[in-house]
Length: 283
Ligand code: ATP
Ligand code: MG
Image (cartoon, rainbow, N blue to C red; front, side, top):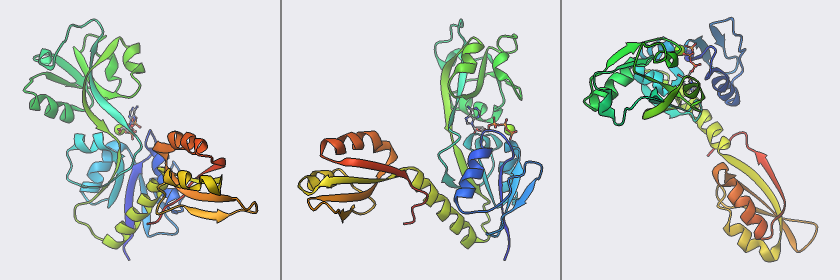
């Protein structure tokens, strides 16, 4: 049987979450930073640790079958790969930012101006779509300092909290793309079965992350109101308690509804609410 290869970031913002995801899929491997390849002992898979810049091309060229990388890098490298699964981490936005004291009002004010960026392909495409011609200046790091140094009129970069922009006297001007980590695959799919098995495991981990396991006690008289609040995977389990007029209800609820649901459950008569994380949900 062929061994699959998956490329993940060696160190940086996506490394820890990528390793955690694969470990939560039950894969057993050493995360030694000094090595480029780590074999998985309980699945026919090898993990390649790479710079994130290289991951899209490695997957496109079939050196790795799969990769975990930010959507921004996939778009920037303009590779032809399959998008297999959005992973929900590494979220960020790529924005154009301008100096606080500049009087840029609309996108067309960028016409003929210079913009420094590490993402010339994404920026070039965006400007073209908006019929704007600017001078794109490729800079590989610390893009934010370039207007202050007189190197450019604006910048285009990843912005998360905006703190770095602020400390460099810049303000957000236009959102161009939002990004998150994505599982990508080579276009010529070999080992379809293994890849599907891995995707199924990843999906069960992602589903579990979005959901909490809840156990609560309720008087039988209040059970209908409580059940109405709980959609569950199918329907909640109702378990008898030693105290005759009471039951325990076991169910799962989506993380996003969590606080809203818990206060409504309390109002409906739920007591002793215990909330637990879920490791995996296999459907
Ligand atoms: P490498 O050494 O692998 O080339 P890098 O320095 O280019 O790493 P990182 O800063 O580790 O890259 O970011 C990796 C990815 O994490 C980004 O391409 C982006 O998809 C994502 N990301 C999420 N939030 C942020 C953020 N606040 N700043 C930068 N990148 C972010
Ligand atoms: Mg990089």
